[in-house]
Length: 250
Image 1 (spheres, helix red, strand yellow):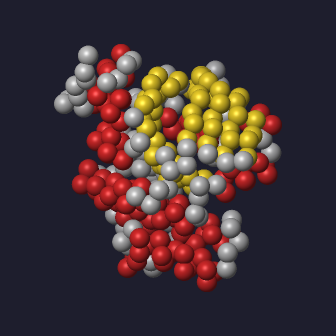
Image 2 (cartoon, helix red, strand yellow):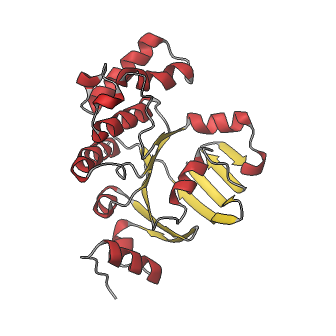
């Protein structure tokens, strides 16, 4: 479904991604773990061209693009198949909850206002915020704003949803409500790539874990393989630091 091959990305003289290969199959829930600065978010943003990689190829379904030669049409086609949930919500502050969700449906997907509203209301019911459709983001908690961000992504009916640390901007007591919504969506079989620092969540929800450090994929495998039997010393060090209860079999 998604195939990344030899993805490189630099900012100035700093090479952030150093030849990433990643395959995502339909229905996969992949959590990308790693320390700050490892390139996780940059990789996610390169998938839908919020950042343009310097080299490599990106394939989503039957669309394969050499990033060096990507045209506006290519990028538009990739973006139609993906949706992003941002760590800082990225809601339009001057628009209501309902308008935030309908905006992309009307402007990008050219749906009628009536159809867009029907879809938006359905998505709000799914995340338990149908009673907030006329509220503005400033009147919502951080957890509610992020749930609206998830509803906005779902409304686009994408092939894959990209989550960029969806709970990192939240107060600890609000994290659970957002993770519960993501768990609910996961049961519907939607393909997801999630950059997260929530170790237990990643272990519970994912069918594959990717550990990145220094702009490369250090190790990947099932949650059991990564959390219980990691092969790479750097993976072991990372998990031991973040999960005090972490043990692995020798």
